[in-house]
Amino acid sequence: DSARERWRAGPPTTFTGFWRMQADLQDAAKSLAAWHYGVRPRLQNLLAARLSERHGVSLTGDPQAARRLLNSGPGRHDLWSWMDPQRPIPPDTSAQPGIPPAVLAALIDRLEHL
Image (cartoon, rainbow, N blue to C red; front, side, top):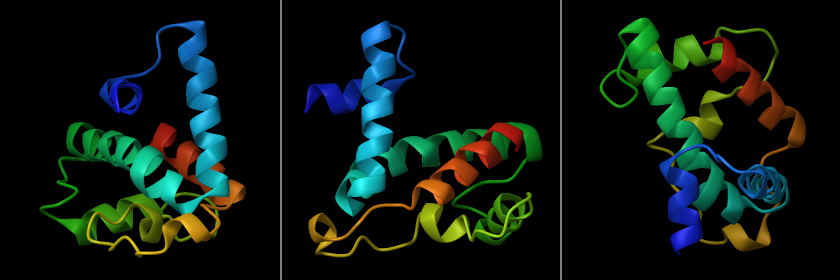
């Protein structure tokens, strides 16, 4: 839908956009479908940009280097398994819980520092 496309297109620039983004992150923690179809593509775009601009690494062209960089930060979470562009989307995502909040927080923190 158009709201989802606007969210993927760029960061929210309004107060309402901020609350929408916060709600999307909460939904991603509750539902694997919300993670895979909403938040994950957005964070993958950010990851690809960070890897390319700051490290000269292509997310899709050199996934092993991308994995090493993403997982090299502090924390014990396997962040790559959540961001791997080759990870298939399970058919029953609506019935599964989403990304654990601690992993989501670690992922966002890692993206900020990457």
